[in-house]
Length: 300
Image (cartoon, rainbow, N blue to C red; front, side, top):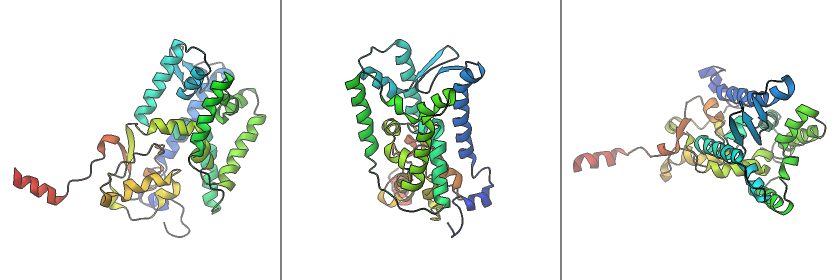
């Protein structure tokens, strides 16, 4: 990336603005549309979806339950109802297929706030800040599960930023504004990707599912990489890129297998060389070397 250029500037020149931002735009449409579906009932009286992102019923037919909320409910000692079991299974299977942390980048409305804070952080060239352990979110995940077990209540939903914003949009933001502003300032001033990447227990839970998910991003054309570093600049979990992008010499395949990857596809957007694309975890084979190919021909 040339000095003074923003990440993706070359992609805009080569591919045009829309192609260099298409997945970002699709994510915003997805996040806003899903939130609008939940708000259509209380705001307009059109009950396409009843409930909230923790537990809902779509078109009076399809139950959907956040698996983390379902797990907490079991720990409270309340026997699960059939709709909850089905809803949790449907959601779990979906994220197992498309990537656990897809929830973070394509569904969660808080992602809009954190992405804005981190965009502004890059714009203002803010560096450094407090260093959080990436294990912190797993300790917080363990803590909310223990709280459910000890208290008999799903305590996390009282302070979950997503739930607070949803309730705030219906009944008045109130304290929800404080949570939104705190998360924004945390990511802007304290540390890059502080909330989603280091603290959010929901992201921690979905990253565990994401370790085994099928849909992946692959540096399938990594030989074309010109080391512009735009993908590293925009990726919220940039450390997951290097093994797939630069691991050919270590016999590492081009598919990003880390559960921390949220399939946001910004690396696809900003790459002028079309290095990245969507793939599956089953497409991680290294290309056969010419020497191996010749040996196989001789043996046949």
